[in-house]
Amino acid sequence: MRIKKWAVMALFCGIFLTGCSKQTASKEASNSSNKSSQSSKSSVKKTSKASSSSAKAIKLDAAKLTPQESGSLITLYCADRFGGEWSNLLQAGQNGSLTITLHKTSDYEFKQPGSGYAYEAAASGQTGTTYYTLSGSTFYFYQGVKVAGGSGSFLGQATKQEMADYIVKKGQLAEFKQLAKKVEIVDKSGQTQRLSEGRSGYFTIPAEMQGTWYSASNYDGETTHSKYVFGQSTIFIQDDKYDTKGTTTTLYTRSSDFKMPLPPTEKQMDQVKGWGLGHLYQQDGLNYMNVMGWYQTVGSGTSFAVHTENIAGNNVQILVCASGARPWVDGIAYRSQAMAEKMQDQHFDDLHYRDDE
Image (cartoon, rainbow, N blue to C red):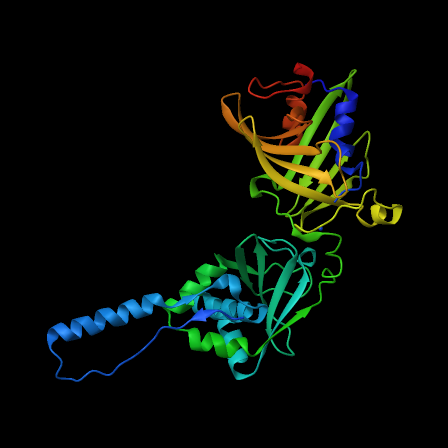
């Protein structure tokens, strides 16, 4: 496909122009009553039914747990579900204490790296081999993790509420409370201080978009090759004409009480260099992820969407790169460089291109 030079530049530079972008509540209702052994059959049934209703009324609200309680919850859940090193950890914690240490996810090679942190669960004073990561509301669990660059064995996943419901069902509330008193949280990630200037957390890029994409765009007989690498919360864009070294943007969510500096100072602009503001929206039947600069107040940023097209009888996923208010399609990327070369002049009838206007 032919793309005007300014449109190509917008794809690789546009999102950077303006400074890219940052207790316990457990309800206990277990009343046990010893009934006479001479109760009638009907009264036994009523007592049994009442006990069952009481058990169902027990609820552990995962949204209100402290970090220490969350560490206790995860340890109990993983020990019961997966055993192994998590079971050893639980025993060590019950006999002593536990430490949950926050590390940079980039220091590891997890199957599901999550967003922001890698959590090491260990007996206090020891190096742990049991870890978990978090993406959105889902936790991912590992064992056998090495300290530097390790990936370990992926065991499974669960939301915090699923874990809370699980330990209630297993009757482990008393263990949960006792263990929570022995959990210490230590932050060695160095990221807490950086979450400033209105950043409330990391923005999670849709899973289907993550990975590497390639595009080839023809302009005046010259072909520009580009590469997009989407991580959990980062975008790396590189091309062989305008940005040969490549540029990385880290995406964040913004706190509701953030007040935009108007205009931002040069120091503030330098501070947010490489930060992006991400959000999701739908348009023309596509699920777009939009990226704008952290202090960007004009323009529509750059948008990306994963879409399926039928190519030579096969359903092929493509990455739609777009900009503008509609937005309009500026380029298409593919999972392989060979496909990008082959399809560089292809227009798809169900997409709205800028040069169609």
